[in-house]
Image 1 (cartoon, helix red, strand yellow):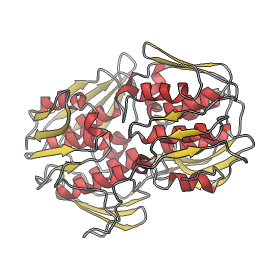
Image 2 (cartoon, rainbow, N blue to C red):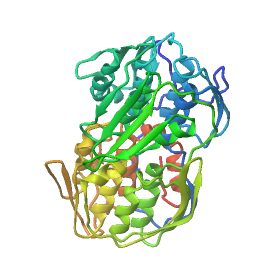
Image 3 (cartoon, rainbow, N blue to C red):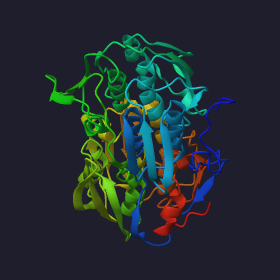
Image 4 (cartoon, one colour):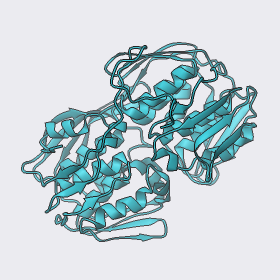
Length: 466
């Protein structure tokens, strides 16, 4: 974190009345095999992707938006702090309840200080699109993990607006952006499917005169398109000749405040869900989980592996499909996951790899190169997570191969999380079924996406002792 930057990890209520959290200290965890089945009903925190976008779009809309179910992890609090620094009024009115008033598209102000995006690559990349399309100079930074992650993938297309960028070698934070009040509209084809890059380009197009066009080779999560429509933008989506998608946005819309209900995050639901599948005799229900079809690749894959996973009470809330998940312990078998499914489950591969390690047979996850540029080199870290605990794996090109143990993960290893919250949670799930305890070097960064994760898991019987 840059000294003097906008911190988003405070223990007190700030002047806007928003509860914030302290900088996490190092918290190792030793996880032993579960002594009883997991049972009960839970709710997971609000969807992180939608929470970031809700704050950003509400800040760009005229009027006051009320957000319910906002994830209040550190990453999202950093986004709230950044939008306040840019001139929006973002106030917490209760747990998960926020009021956001924005000045309108193109009307954000230059921040007085450095914008600290914490651990969130989503926030940093999406906000780059906003900053590039406003006539201001700004600087973004983040924690040690985020400062190692490449931003060139958004810098390159956004430079087409006329904005200029100055970053460390490889396009890494801290990064200075000199935006334009009259940016050029973009016509960009993504070389690799990425919802973050797509969203950055669309956000830049909001303040550009004319049509912004984005073509993606494979459909990625469409929360940005859904929320643009929700706030009144003119967005169209069509199928590309090669099977991908083309998204068109008409610039300078009059975005109008609209209330937002944030569903439970399917990526967060993945951890108690997989734990219940693996721990013998378990039966849990997870209420109010987002079921956007571009986010549910994990659920499809687990059902192909033999998971007893039911979707109950399917409904629509805030423009997004939602349902309740009933999960029962299941005998899983290996599966091959096609590359075109990767964008719909890119964040869930580490915990899916744990499920595959416990299953019988061999699993192959195809086209997972995007894992190399997540919070860590998540592909290498997932391989290390498994192999350090006695599970055989392989990387073949852009594919990850896991050789299942048929319910006999040896365990006994130490997991290096590399400040990656999803690796830490995946390791905790593995520890619940491994034959020897699993040591996790640090669980503090779980707070970035899943506040009170250990407590919630203990409420269904995990028995974690921090």
